[in-house]
Image 1 (tube, chains in turn cyan, red):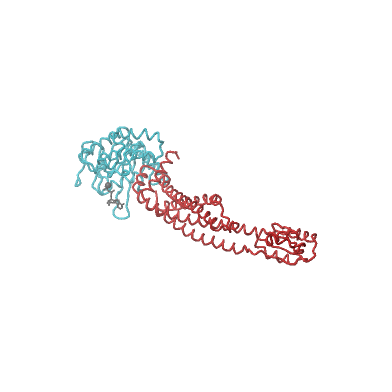
Image 2 (cartoon, chains in turn cyan, blue):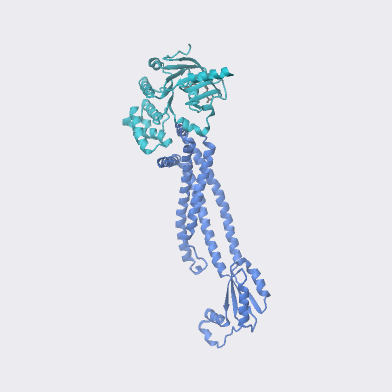
Length: 247
Length: 298
Ligand SMILES: Nc1ncnc2c1ncn2[C@@H]1O[C@H](COP(=O)(O)OP(=O)(O)O)[C@@H](O)[C@H]1O
Ligand SMILES: [Mg+2]
């Protein structure tokens, strides 16, 4: 008994600076095989992590678990000290304010302009008008859209739309940025721009987790790469590279 | 909640209304129809009650006395009758006064032919009631007294008026209840459509960390706005129609002016405005809250 306790303690101290911990996490949907099957992961504060793998390997499920859209069927997920499986429903909004989330399909409000899309994120967490007027132009400048704040988002290119989405994700200064295939709909040039922006965000202290299929970028950026297959982590390498599907 | 957040939420409510304007219109129209009927019935019933009350005040019982009854006895009877709870007022009319009144009403200049008062024994008591339904009991009581020759009941029977009035009230209540249900159903539909149209936006809000309250509030505000607009429109229409009708009745039935005394629109609206707005806002609030709770699991 004493031994076990000591072991646990040792384990904890080894991962003391974890911002995300998955301990033997399994997620099963109503039908089919588990989407995640006994995944254990440790991500430290300030890391930049790529998650790669075949389609259907469980990457999006992992992201949804991290933002508490889903709860694990088994195992525990701890994000910033919160046990997500036990988190009470009414505490979810507050928790999510620590996260920035970006999707492949941008998910912008099509009836509003660039400025309003970004301001929206601040209004929702009830920032004052003064703060909004200060923060929104500044973040738009960071993503290179200062001159387009009045444009309708439907008139922007894909790359520009994803920058708006990135600005919206970052305007509330989240601790963690989660991106599920953010460059999936973009050409190589725009994909690089978005990745570089995320690298810059990471250098400013935000932990960044990016799901991607972009082999070229993954191989060029020399970041940590977690490779998934059929709900299991098959590789987890510092300065890793993109593994082929049949490896 | 911050002022700016409050206005943002209200703005979101209006946005949602605009986005599914046909459902909004249908909801507003139903509530308007409902509150319009309510207003019409309220105006009619209130005026009817006013007429009944005026009529009631005129309802009287007249008591005549046996030949040779002294004024002392009549006044003693008057004091006795005044003690009864259903009696509002008793007026003593002496034989002289009765004759004067008769002359004035029926004879005019021909009255000069009479030297003595032919209505020598017509001294009487006019009894006005505070509760008309007690009229039969009072008559029975009066007939049991001594020295009484005749008890005359007033022709106006207020009970008929009261009956008609409550019939109108019941029918209108029934119609209004049905319309209220239809309104709630339509508001609920409007809000449901609003939620499905804004599914994307709601999802984004949730990802960003909007609280349940913040996600739900615009829909409730949407319902309340529908309720307010739906109550103001019929009030305007009723205001115009009421005044037109009042003028029409006053001109057309000029000779009935003493009974058909239409209340001023201000008196009606004093109560009608707050009641209508309250009902409108209430329907909007209840309809949207119920729907949001059912369909918006945030
Ligand atoms: N809502 C769902 N209901 C049932 N099965 C699902 C659902 N979402 C994903 N899955 C299944 O879970 C597995 C992993 O899916 P996903 O996490 O989306 O993979 P990836 O993002 O890596 O393509 C797939 O087999 C997929 O079909
Ligand atoms: Mg996916």
